Image (cartoon, rainbow, N blue to C red; front, side, top):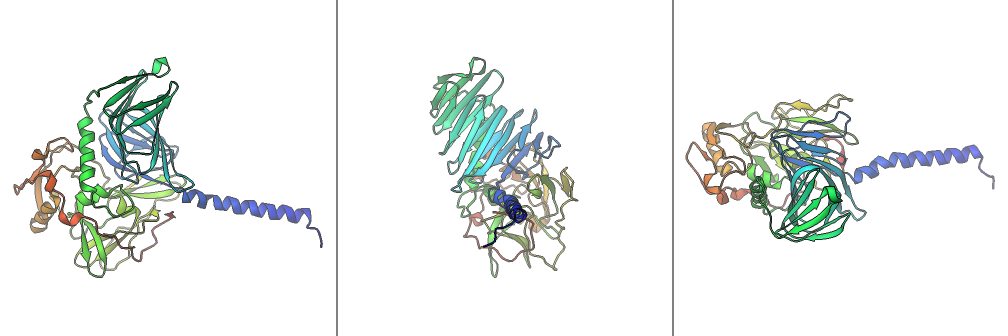
Length: 436
């Protein structure tokens, strides 16, 4: 049998190496994760690792591995993870998302570094998280609710619920619920334990945000938790003959389409991603499919949960106009806006809600019973509301419309908002790269 020539062997090895290199993006893609910037108030900035540094952030921007998020003097932000866990950042806080990946068994793993400032974490325990602050590391695989405040002199860990294990230069420390651990940074993080938690000014904001998610994320039949509470607050599901279970935001109206307001952001390794400007605009732009339904307008069909997309899917139609989903020219690193960008103000004296607003400008939980308000807008074309500060008032002082209704907060969730089993999803247009 003839022996292969050295040149032929070299060619085969090079070809094999090329195949391996070509396979790497696919392997990396299978590990791709994004989490949601779910609330933005005031001055919030994001560094997406593009080389441009920090730029203005807005609601629904995807957060990828290596990204940084920071708040200004009056800025606040919330990040939602796939299982519905959340992290809230107070003013003058910086966090870095060192790792957003998957283990070999497919379990989601998050590693976050609190560079400075104060953050609240409500971890549901379905996934693993590692959180670094000062020289300490918290590793969690169970539910816990806690607050971390770190500076150049001292760091405090206050545990509201659950038990949190911390490991640092002084060894391991178990912090039980309703206790506070203090670390002296000047003394190599020497720790002390207190049997009480000193109240912080934004504790009420954190607690009411959790209450909002708990109330509106009930009856979730999807495999994901991020964005569910906003779907149930800002819209409702309808069983449409021939289509199945379809979701639609309130206050849409004639001429509205789901892609008319938002922005394109560039992410290294992922390309351009479309971020919706609407406060509910996360899951309908990463999963499932948009369809124009005669007599109803644009509706979202849940499904296709095994993959998220850069560009939202939709079924093309000749029945109405739809904003083109065209990414910016190759090489554009700056965020490019389309229509209006999603910004949130937690303080608002009054505003007119009109058909076509699709919930934009209404802070989370600030107006009772949007389903009732939606019916009023359908009848009259608009309605005046006086929103309460976002998560800043007791249920009795939630806002009223000019029509004078003021139901309690507990009755504000529409009965039709509960999830039915979502269909697998229908035919779609090409919606950009799919990440498994």
